Image (cartoon, rainbow, N blue to C red; front, top):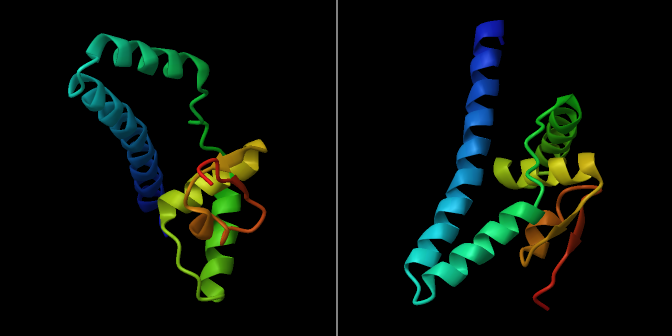
Length: 119
């Protein structure tokens, strides 16, 4: 892969990650404005934003974890979406636990820590 194509692929990935973060915020705000308690829900979103850390440091560690796991999973015939694998890679790189109701999907990623708070 030539350098220009590699840079374009990286820029596209960063753009997709940014869009995903914004799409979550857009969905939350839509939910607030579509509710009967608009101001209360907007304050809850603001509070959530202030206490959550956005992991946007896409670095070589995250890229390496992603690439190794994608290759390993592909060799084993296990399919997982790139965004879920990227979320798992960020979690592994930062020593974090993924809280999800999608245990079966994330369990496929080696070394990822997951918890289900719904059950």
